[in-house]
Image 1 (cartoon, one colour):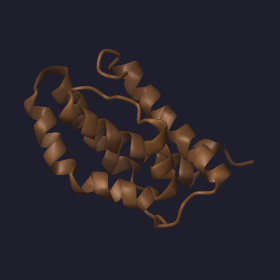
Image 2 (image 1 turned 120 degrees about the vertical axis):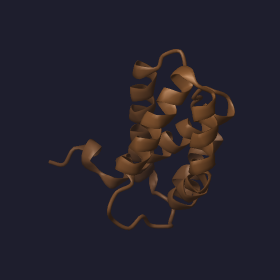
Image 3 (image 1 turned 45 degrees about the vertical axis):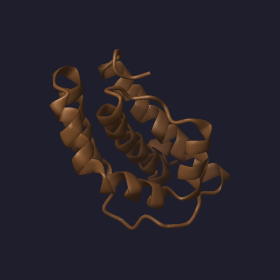
Amino acid sequence: MTRVEDGKYYAWGRLYAALGALDGLAVAGRVVAVPEAGMRRAAGKPRTVCEELLNDAGARVFTARQKGGTVAEAAAVVLADVGRLIRPEPMGRGGLGEADAKEFRQGYEAQLAEYRERWADLVG
């Protein structure tokens, strides 16, 4: 039996969390969980949402790194995570069904929990 953690939708959720974390570190100096509407949008168009966040990743990491301290350190780790979490396979443009969206959310929550454990003061 395949583990959810090995699935592509779980991995896409982790990627979405990493991209969102990078965005949060740049904008606010901290990571905040996406609201429900944002999660629904991401599950409805995961590739589009990830591409949008990825397009700004360079500027976001630069801004976050200039904040210095723990924020700068976290941004470097998160950027490396983004590179590692982009799977070497096509990412479809369609929306996710209910089961796939659940796996996507689980991946998102797992990645956010990993960041929360590492940087409790930066992750809400």
